[in-house]
Image (tube, rainbow, N blue to C red):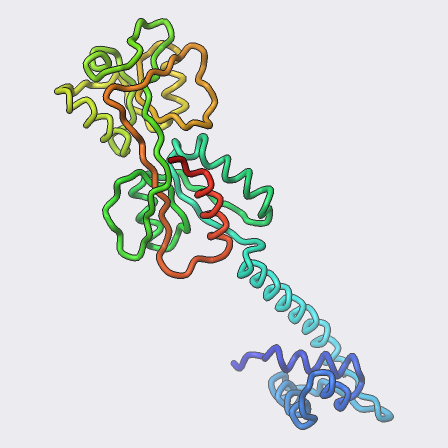
Length: 294
């Protein structure tokens, strides 16, 4: 079945509005034979007469009136669709799909979202809570646009992964414990521990930190939700190793933070697909990069 061209419908509407083939041709910047051809093709496709001539004036037939009404809606929808897409091309609005861990979501992403709300309120950010490996996989298959991932990461074909920021990993200790000013692997390994689960980069970092001093402690519990870990620390269940962003609020007064010796850093990167980057995605990338710390 042949489809009906929007150009033919636009011609029909122009004739209905102006009551004349010649006037419609001038308005559409078409030759009069082209206008006649458009109507002939439409009538052939519909199988009925769409226009009638009375006293030198052209008006739609009964069937033509129905088609003109539908054509107006179709043309308006098409124009609106093009306007919407153009706004996305210009970066005035759009949808950006972002993947990040709970750690990045808690204190870093909200700052970027606040900036976007002020400067680009029509950009919709859809956030997925994912591990770094899940984020990279979904970026590669095109179901994400931006990822916040733990570093280092091996190169991934078709993706750009750039360093973003680094934050110190601190010891979060129940306030009623007696703990040193700087926490060492030796001291912490002898305490009850609450650590990130083994699927996370932070888990591997902390395992290596303990291993350099010859320790391999078994945690009381493993979680992948930093706020839940902090709640358990506040309750006195154990100590934890967590990154601390400079802009993050101070922890519960039942928790004390101590620097580590040797120091440990959580490094994050921003990943996106190589090549053309849509304007809305670029706005989000720019806002995230403004949060970078040395």
